[in-house]
Length: 125
Image 1: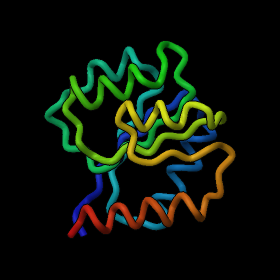
Image 2: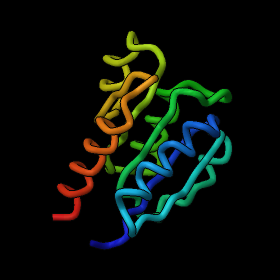
Image 3: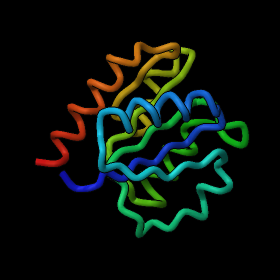
Image 4: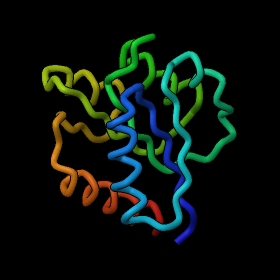
């Protein structure tokens, strides 16, 4: 399996650590790029290959749809986006903005990693 390039966008250090551990435990060849603010994400070169995006709703310098729109339109990222939020009423809006998968926080780690692994396997084929 080739190295999986995972983009994580979250201010939440605990969330980042949980996602890191879940993915690293299950995927040996993985590279992480992490951003804790939208301002820094804007400087991310669009030439970087991204296989999967993990987006947490906790970004204080913008709202989630700005990040999603920026990833899809400006950075031209077509990779699946996993969106995590403590509120479920924004789920439909997130999907309409370009998110592929929505998980309400708190989430069941096993369910999330199984879903991510399934997505990565389909990408790798």
